[in-house]
Image (cartoon, rainbow, N blue to C red; front, side, top):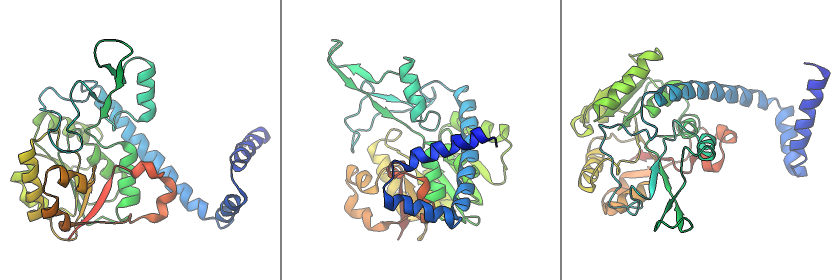
Length: 311
C-alpha cells in the first residue's frame, strides 16, 4: 500500500472516530487491541461474498420474470382480514425485496421506472404514497436469519420454506448456512420450474436442495421431518379459511422444539385470523442464537423477521 493510500485510510478512520464520544472510542480501541476485530472481519468478508452470490442469482431471475415479480400463472390478491386488509391493488405496488434492495428501489424511483404515489381523485396534488409489498425475503433479512437468529451449526437439520416462489429462502440457506437439507414446497408449477432452473444453472448440490410441487397440506411428512420452518406472508395467496386451516395443520404436524420463522409477528397473524387464543401458547418467541454477530446488523435489519420455538 502506498503512502498516499495509508494517509487516505487514516483520514477515513479519523473522520469516523470524530463522530464518537470518548467512551465509544475506548470500546473501539479495546476491540482493536484485543484482535477480536480480525474474527469479525472474516465474518464480514464472508457475508459480502455470499451477498454477491445472491445478487448474481437475483440478476438472473430478473431476466426471467416480469418487473413486478408476479408470474402470470399465480393468483395473488390483497387479504380481506388482518393488518393489511385495507391494502388494495390500486393502493399498492409489488417490488420484490430479494431482487431489489432499498438502494435499487431508490434508483428505480429516480429513473421513473417505479412510482411511489397514486392519485386519490385524478387531481395531481391529491396523492398518497403507495404501499410497497414484497412476497420474497430480502437479502439482508436472509443474512439476519442465518447469521444472527438461527444457531450457527445446523448441519444435521432440515429447513422447509412454505411457499418458496422464486426460491429466495432456499438460496439464502444454501449460501449462508451449513444446513444439511433445504426443501421448498410450492403450489405453482411455474415457480417450481424457475427455482429448479436456478438450482441447475448455479450448480447447487441437488442432494442438499430441492423443490417440491405440492400443496403443503398434502405433505405432512415434510413438515414433521423439518427442524426449521419458514413461513412468509401467506394471506396474499390464500383466503382466510384456508389460511386458518394451514395454521391448525402446522400445530398438528410441526414437531416440538422446531424453529418457526415468520415475516410477520404471530400475534398479528393469529389475531387477524381470530385464532390467537387457540394457538398463541403453541409457540414461544426466542432470542437470537448468534448474539456475537449482533455487530453486523442494525435493529431495523431484523424488524420484520420473527423467530419462535414450537412448544
